[in-house]
Each structure stands twice: as structure tokens, then as C-alpha cells.
Image (cartoon, rainbow, N blue to C red; front, side, top):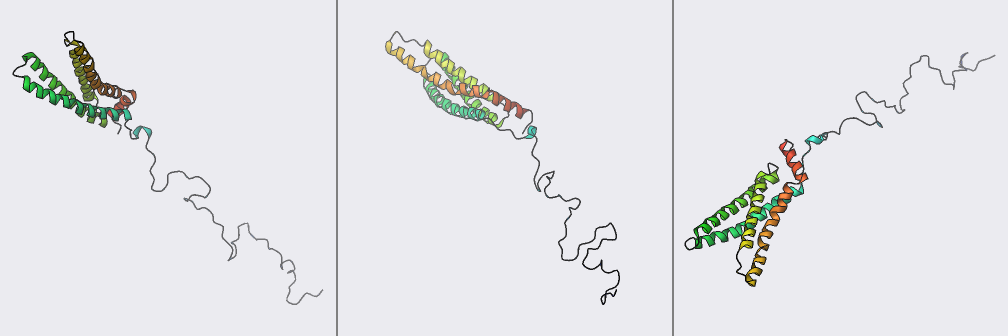
Length: 215
């Protein structure tokens, strides 16, 4: 049988049929076809979660080293201390003026007692201001507690003096005594509330944490 011109015997199976590779290795795709991208070692593969943190980020701080937030009760107690100190200074100045005028004609014992009250009120105001600063900073609450307790003791002294005052059986004097008892009770409200707030659970825990060295 005559073969077509230019065709050699044994070439029928070579024209138009895929050739079986002679080896078991993958053949390089011909030029012009898209190359398949294989993930390289050391680079993250798409679709898989990566460990670590974003570039430039820092890991979150452990809970024991997280910054502590000052409770609102501590802030409120410090503010009440400042207000109480300012209010206490007003009658203190009036008392100083009255003692200066009565030092020559008044009873010596009452004058001395009056000056002791002046010193106690000045000390209470100073302790509340200084203690309020220390309390709000988380350093200590001892000066604030001492100032609030001293203010309550002064209010109690005034209340006892008013109740023990002689009214001479006059109805008008009795009414005045009843009205006068309102003032020491009013002055005792803020130090009592501030004392309770400074001794509260959240405030005590915050101060204990600050004292333990957490910042």
C-alpha cells in the first residue's frame, strides 16, 4: 500500500493524538498558559488562619497588669471632703473674730475652749483637703478618715452644747434651740457620707490593689 507523500510509516498514531510523556515527571506548561502558584515556605497560605498578631500590633496586657480604674465612690468622697473643708472654714473665721472680741470680757475657760474648737476645725479642714488628694490618688485614706472623724466629733460637740444650753423655760428659747440643732446635723451629713464611701467595698479593694503595686 502506497503511503501519502511526506508521511513515513508508523506516523499514523502521531498526528492529532496526545503523546504520552516518556517520564513520570510533570512537564512544564507551554508558554502563554497561566502558571499555577504554589505557596512558598515561610509565607502564609490564603484561606488558613495565621498565628501571631497584626504587623505593628502588641499583644494585650495580662489582666493582673491592666490599669485600675478609680471607683466613682472614691472620687465623690474626695469632692465631699473639699466641700466640707470649705464650709468648715466659714464658721471658723467667724469664731476667730468672736473670740478676739470676747477675749477681754469673756470667761477665760470658754475662751480657751473656743480656741481649741478653732484649732480642731482648722485641723479637720486641712486633713480633709490633704486626705482628699491622697485618697483620689490611691496613696492612702488615713488622713481623709481622720479628717472626717474629726468633723463628726466637732458636730457632735456643737449638738451637745446646743441641747445643754439653758432656755430659762422660755418657749421662744426652746424653739431657737430646736432650730439650732439643725446646723450641726447639716454639717455632719457630708463627712458621714464621705466616710462611708471611703470605707466602701469597691474603694477598699481599689486602694488595696494600688497598695499592692498595681499601676
